[in-house]
Length: 82
Image (cartoon, rainbow, N blue to C red; front, side, top):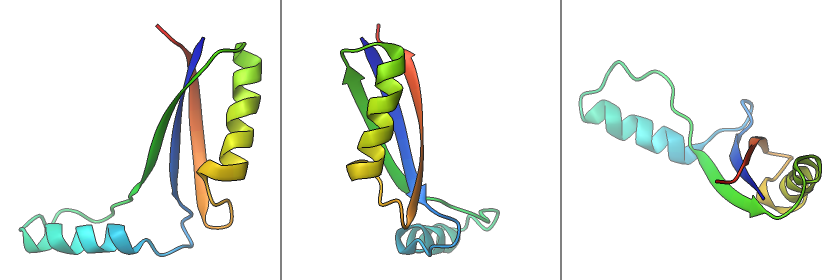
């Protein structure tokens, strides 16, 4: 059994309106040292398979559903489930 941790964020060339709104609010709350903020999605998946198959499966899941590959980038970690 393996656990996959998937992180999805907008690509650098895409404007992230949610992150910009949060950044503006934090500046208004007197956190001027904040220079960059990124929002994203986080998924945690448990897979009943081998480690090699888990990586292939997660890659396909990201490509087909979890990330909009035109606008978002993703990365993931595969670890043995405890």
